[in-house]
Amino acid sequence: MLLIVSGGIAAYKAVYLCRGLRQAGAQVDVILTPAGEHFVGRVTFGALTGRRVYRDVWEEPLAHVTLGREADIAVVAPATADILARLAHGLAGDMATATLLAAACPLLVCPAMNVRMWEHPATRRNMEALRADGVHVLGPDHGELAEGEVGYGRMAEPDEILAKLGHLLAPPSPWSGRRVVVTAGPTRAPIDAVRFISNHSSGRMGFALAEAAWRRGADVVLISGPTEVAPPDGPRRIDVETADEMLDALRAELADASVLLMAAAVGDYRIGAPSNDKIKREQMRELPLKLEAEKDLLTETSALRREQGVFTLGFALETQDAVENGRRKLDKGLDLIAVNVVGPETGFGTSTNRVTLVSPSGDAEEWPLLPKQEVAERLLDRIETEFSGNSK
Ligand code: CTP
Image 1 (tube, rainbow, N blue to C red):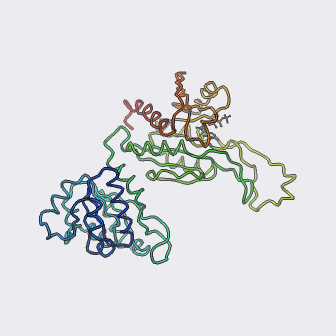
Image 2: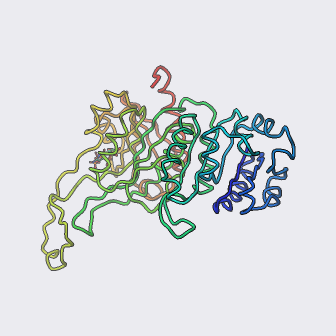
Image 3: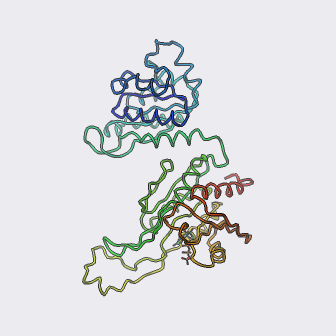
C-alpha cells in the first residue's frame, strides 16, 4: 500500500500509522512531499518500512506509475489543504500527486489543517470534488489545533485510520454496502438538572456487534447511550442520552437500513415531569418520584421496520424463565432474539455472555459462555444466512 505524508504538524502521527500498518502485516511504500520532509525525515520511514522512501519524481522516473499500479490502497495522512486542492484539480507536478493520478487503487485522505483553512469555500469545493470522484475521507476531528485554536482540523488518530483502511480493504461480503443500525448502552431518564435513573449497561455487546459488522464491510451506524467503555473506532456514532433521543436517531437512521441490532438497555420508566432546576435535598426527602412507562422503541419502530424490510435482532435480559420471556418479546416485531440471563459472567458490564437464541419458529438454541466478540460474530453469521433471497 501507499502512504503519502504531506506537510503538516500531524506528520508525526503518520509515523505511528506507518508502524501500525507494518504491524498489521502491510508492505508500505512511503512518499514524502518536500513540505512533509520538513516535519519528519526519510530515515524514519525508511527504517520502519525497510523500503525506499520517495520524494522526487526524478529520482526514479517510472516509480510514479509503478507504485500506484502495485498498491491495493493509498492513504494521504496528513492531507494538507494544498495537496487536497492539487488532487481535486488533477495536478501532477510532484511525486505524490503524479503517483496518485496514475494510481488505480482506492484513495483515503485524512485532512489536517487550521480550522479556517478547512472551512474556506475553496477547500469545501475541493472536498466536494474529491468525494464526487470516489475519494474516501476520514476526519478531520474536532479539538485543539497546533496554533491553540479549537475546531475541526485535527488529523484522525492512527488507530482510526487503520480501522478505516481495514474496512475499505474488506473483501466483498454479504454485508458490503448494507446499512446496519446498532443501538448500545443504557438510556437515562432525567429526574432534575443533575440526576437521572439509568441502568448498569456498559454498551459492550452493542459495541462488539457494531465493530464486527463494520469489519465485514457493512455501513454501520452506532447509536449509543452514555457509557465509560470506549466505542469502536470505525462505525459512525450518534451519542444519545434519553430514550426519546434514541428513538429520534433510530427513526432517522432506519430509513435505508437492512439490519437493526437492538442491544441497548433502554429504560422502562421515565419521570413524569423532570425539574429543570436541581431539586434541593430538603425537597428530595419527601419527593414522590412519579414514574411513567417509557416508550418501547422496538414497538414504536415496528411499522417502519416492517415497511422497510429491516431484519431485527433484539436482546432480552432476564433473571428467570429466560426462553419463555424471550419468546414473548419477539412480538415487538423481532426476527430473532438473543436472551441472556443475568449471572456472574453474563449480562451487564461483563466481557462474556451466555446467550440463548430464540426464533419465531420457537426454536431455542443455547450457546456456551463466550466472549462478547465471539457472540457478536456468531450472531452476524446467523443473520448472514437470512440474507440469501433478500437483496436489500
Ligand atoms: N427495548 C426497547 N424499548 C424499551 C425497552 C426495551 O426497544 N423501552 C428493547 C431492548 O433494546 C431489547 C428488547 O426491547 O432489544 C427487550 O428488552 P428488555 O429490557 O429485555 O425487555 P422489556 O420489554 O423492557 O421487558 P421487561 O423489562 O419486562 O423484561
